[in-house]
Image 1 (cartoon, one colour):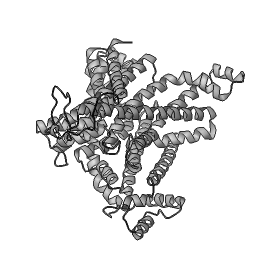
Image 2 (cartoon, each protein chain N blue to C red):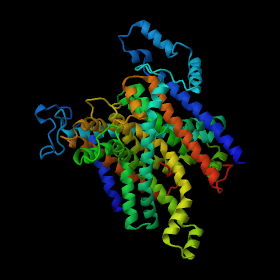
Image 3 (cartoon, rainbow over the protein chains, first blue to last red):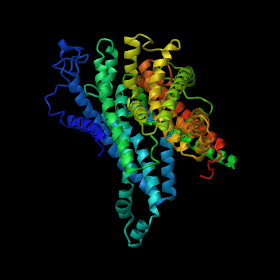
Image 4 (cartoon, rainbow over the protein chains, first blue to last red):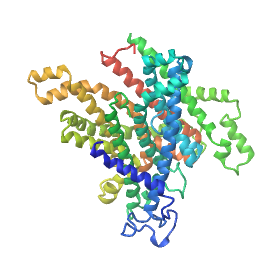
Length: 268
Length: 308
């Protein structure tokens, strides 16, 4: 691995570890200390305190947990559902494929996270509804990619050979097609992961994501915008946290794309 | 040939539009429990509830509701706002100019940043300039607008005092929201400009232009950029969706009185007909712009094969 890319990998691992260990660490993300309200960063508290006197570093770590849990769950669901539907569409063809293409075209016609905002707004806030809203939006990319890739694999010789040997369709897809289309799907997953991190924070920023007192980077920024002149650290700390995570995932995605040498999936 | 393509493309667009409308129509049925109760609150009188249920057509069979919604839209009737009792269409028309101005300004900023950055990176491929430009682009892609916006407000409005913090008064107030929305697009766009320029610079006619001793400026702008422009414009059309969705958040940050702000306000007030209308308007705009760029692309570039 190129040494330059060990930096984003290290940052990603640090965030993952913090998120994983968050509940075990001696943190008090919800502890309100009135005498520490809006306290700026200092030696004992590197990132200062928020408008309720809560420790921002503790909330950053719990926010990382929220962010990464949502991202992992949403990307896993979308990956499995999208890949399954895409492969089935391409494999079965006919009406199945036509309906899949129609569904994909329909969902892609909604720009960006607009549909997620509307869904989260109507379903109501909360962790579960955030996951539902983002999964409904995210499966499409995987389905489209899996479909196109499976179509190109379907008529390969090794698939025909497996077919002739009496291998069932299910096994052919699982053993002879899925491994070959995995690389582009993993790259798609990387960028989807970055997208979900941004989308989750965006929903909480709008007040439509996880609810207080659960920490989320998006809602931390939202709270911070009210105190920007006296306590800019309330916005800067979660802002740079999101930037560091998203930037590192994007860099790793780029690295993977170059490494696996896959073109034609460069669309966002 | 082109006419056939046009008709085919139009028909598929109509299908997508009907699909979008159906999905937006179904949104209100996703509200957990009874949407009427959610909108009016638990303390509402039963008579008021029945009145609203009837006004929204929620007492009809679902197919009939759907048909009503579609036929309403066909003559620009999107129902009534629950909050202000105004026609939703009037509310939207009120807000369209602000969003349009913001989007156009952001698009302009994105192009002004991305063209030089992308061309620089392509011409000096693999050099320090290329790396710098692409790292900058990567930052642009990775900063969400709800981080960029507050950051710009902090630096340029609160500390330096050059621009107003929020609102829409005079053209100075346009700069920060447009920058916020434009930078994300600029990041994606400059990568695309670089990619299409790299492809074009490999072509024979560029080598021919070099052999004829044309100046580097003429080669880049008149020969290379002109040919790279078409794919770039298509990408711009595709990215307009992200731009419009980003406008929802950006308008909320800057209290910019556009469609996005209306949508978030309406979500908070549980004014669902207005929420539906905002989603519909933004999505339809996106589909139509994409249709337009596609058709323009096909019409302008003789190399595009129509039967694909």
